[in-house]
Amino acid sequence: MSAGLSVLHSDGVVIVTIDRPPANALDGALIHDLTVLFTELATKSDPPPLVLTGRGERFFSAGGDIKELDGASPQDIDARMREFHALLVAMDQYPRPIVAAVNGHCVGGGMEIALFADAVFAVASARFGFPEINHGLLPADKGVQRATRLLGMRATRQMLLSGDLFDAGHALDIQLVDDLAPSADLLDTAIDAARTAGAKAPVLYAALKRSVNDPDEARDAASLNQTLASAADYFDDPVARSLRDGWRGDRPRRDEQNGMARQARSADAGRP
Image (cartoon, rainbow, N blue to C red; front, side, top):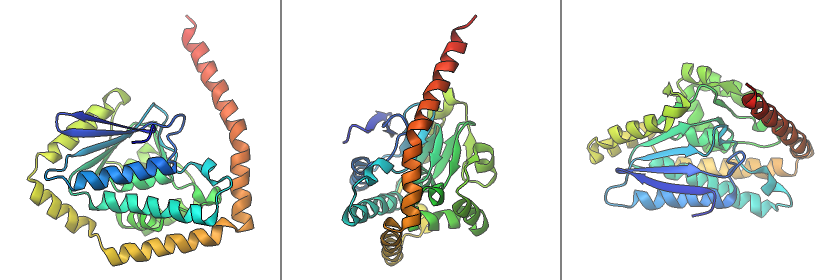
């Protein structure tokens, strides 16, 4: 496992934590390790229920690590998109419960991962969305298709084409999130839900999940081809490149502002 991923066992439930501060961004190594984890656990005679969460209080995951795009070749982008597609396929086909404990911002690739969980619990401060259109990127086609199936075409179209983020209350309204939980209770709530679902007869749970998710190899192959074709189009597109460059260039200023805000909150907390 990469340094950005921790795996713990809690009475039959496997807790998987994305641990890449400050934003739990998904780099290539982390995506690969998550894919291997889901794939290998699925081959066990009795795959465990899983809880997936992020380290800290601000981010479940901010999505793909844009720093990896610096100097990346088309072949690098192709390999990255294939790996992320493979992760979504592995989650889609995992025969046991997957519960997401969304401890903070859940956007881009993080949002796609949450969409492939069987249940999602979130803190009230969490925010969700697909900001890729504003950053010169695109989500994976398989993630878009899952969002359309779960959330409906109109809601998905609005969030994809605007790139706007939305709060946990709206996520609850559109049934992206099953329930909200206080930060102190979030992980325990998710573990309890995973353990309860995991107590169901495994063969029946797997069969029902397969019927609901309706995995299809031909459809997945077409979805991957769509993702790769779109990536080839936008990677060198001057407008998309300009958006990516502007977003990367603005990050140091945002990081400085966030640091100043954290210092101010710490100072306020220390005052009588």
